[in-house]
Length: 459
Image (cartoon, rainbow, N blue to C red; front, top):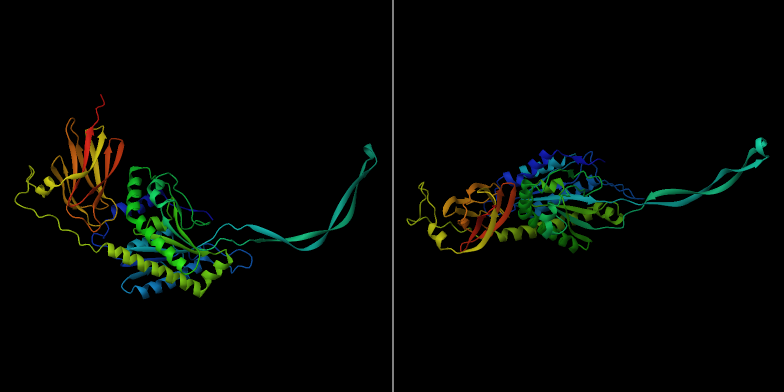
């Protein structure tokens, strides 16, 4: 089956959900909505049981049955959470449609149910014999009188039949949009290997030409890696543990260099669960059985419960209010408050970076680096207020800075609060002509963060 292809602009637009959409997570994060996706459906059957004496099951049917049980179990165990299935019947949905549903319902988790497969080897065996007529060739005479003679004789030959050998690998695996190792995700996303398939037919993968080495691609990768990968990996690990607790083979958390569409285009932590190998006899029976399907649904639900408790307990800290404005606050020449001047002057600066630039004018974009957790900051350049108590989000605070030679050119990040996940962290993208720098800063209520710009002398 041919792999689906999507024009670059569609993929870029979908991935830009990570940048241009300002998330509602400006308050402590709660798990309010869970999206459950039954892989494949309709004309897209997915993997099928093909080995000898298989149940001839279709992945689309298995995933729907497990997904429906999972929806029921989640509703039962988490009554305050909205659970949204992408499909409840045997219909076909494009991967882009599944991602659209998840994003429009503002999901906090995306659970994608699949069944794995793999290439099957072909075997053969003798099933009988048959008599075959063959001919012996002989010649008489010489020269022009030479003649060819065929003498028939009967021989017995074996008769073979061919069949597909079942897979020996079995178990349940969990997949996330990442690199081969969690800590190496960002590097792997940017290494240029943007195409892969998780299954033989590739129907949930889309070929993309997006350049993750481009400035825009790097921002997308950085934001996704910090915001969603860590939580996706945490949830995936919990699912793997709960599957292992059932006594079933748990194959661990697996990661891909480029994400399956429904994982990379959903604006939330997302995992894909390969419930079993449809071409392994034991697995095929398990994922087709009521008992196996229910067991998987309960294991995934327990993992979600644990994940929900962990995430929500992390966000119980009430954000600190910004320092009050007093009569001692300074004003800039335009009369605008540079609050809080007193705290800005007295706080030490411990996180300092020095950047050497070639141009006397540079562009700076500042984003939240990681979870959108209501980090509120003020930004000063050479003691002049540029950003006054603004939230860091996926939308950048952009500014043009003039770099003066022979002077200290300092951009200071002041934390007005700690957000819900201390400290305040910022990703700064600095464009110096054709060159681009990425700087990560960290500030809290005791310390400022600072970037020093030095104009390189090209003479």
